[in-house]
Length: 486
Ligand code: SAM
Ligand code: SF4
Image (tube, rainbow, N blue to C red; front, top):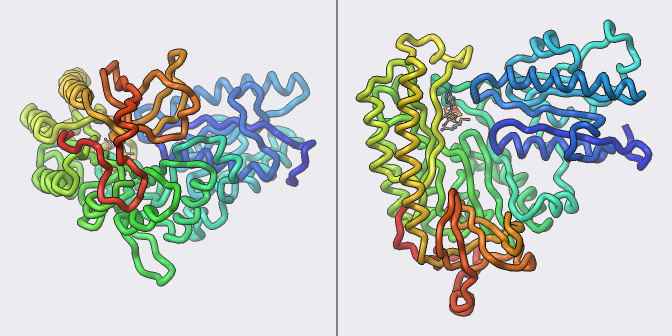
């Protein structure tokens, strides 16, 4: 395929699941851009539709098949109009179900896993090339290998104009895959072994993003704090060291990372939180359960006490650290006492936010074969109680911000006329009366109230005049009031 204005085609990517998939979808769009594909927001107008799937949630593949049912109708309608529509399934469902997708949904032209995105232009060319064949002779392109080569070496860097369009915040995948094998989780099977991108590659991509106007980067990985990329000298660099290197990039104001595993929360990373104001005081650190029996059954490889020790260290390094977590209720064998232990750890830690899930079996994971599966009604009741506790903590956390002045990265127009909105260091949405000219700045906002899931701010002239909320990335810490604790 060549890039000519005449062959500009429309690309629609539907993204399911986590931020890593959002990042991957952007990279797929980047890979196809030099071949004339332009992203569109209306699926009905697309020449190529890609479903970037996620296997974490229950009924993930059913959702994909019902979307493919709708696409079949769209494809038929396009053909009646003398046009065509290519359809691809990417991501973890594609990786897990490969041939099965092609068998059950002949409408699909390509099925490919997360390690094959750099080969997408070739796959599209191949699929497009076989469209003239009779459907019985056409075979979908299937690519679910875990290749030795590094896909990031082959994916093009996002172009400056594209970065500008995507906005002030960006994701940057630094690590993929997982070697932990928690007994409930499909990730090690769908994303493969843990791999870290070389430091040089990460820094180059981050610099490119900043040149395009990005002010906040969130480093991504299934186990991001297990990052151990090699530097130019071939030395392994941890996530903490990487943060120090990224902090030197002029114009980069904020750095976040997700998702972390408690076992990989090492002293180097904790020290980076102490030293680098650029590293935002918000940490998503899933524990899953507060019961040691459950943690063992889940193969988490840490105890409740290990987790609490990590939390203590983090809070000593950065007293205003806001914490977030993931919880699973109803893992096989979970007793009332185990569940009470989970409520207890939530009460002890005090979360600013948390994600919670009812356990659901994933074929091929050890958890699927365990005795003692928990009844749905019990799972529902536990989830309800857990979420009520977390909601109360989130509300209290938001309320504790009222009266403080927080630096907010102003990112967009607000929902109401005359409002603009952004994010606090603790990842809370904040909106306030202000002009859209402020978008792109980090400004001190006085928090004057809360509304559902967000804060209400006011641009404080006094704070603006007096604030030393500068953006020296290596400063010890931002000068927000750090007395509040998550
Ligand atoms: N790597 C992260 C960690 O170790 O905590 C988690 C990544 S996983 C993609 C996101 C979350 O989905 C998990 O933390 C877990 O709470 C939830 N999850 C994964 N498998 C699940 C399952 N079989 N049933 C319910 N929740 C699940
Ligand atoms: Fe899944 Fe556990 Fe790996 Fe997280 S650490 S991705 S939960 S196997």
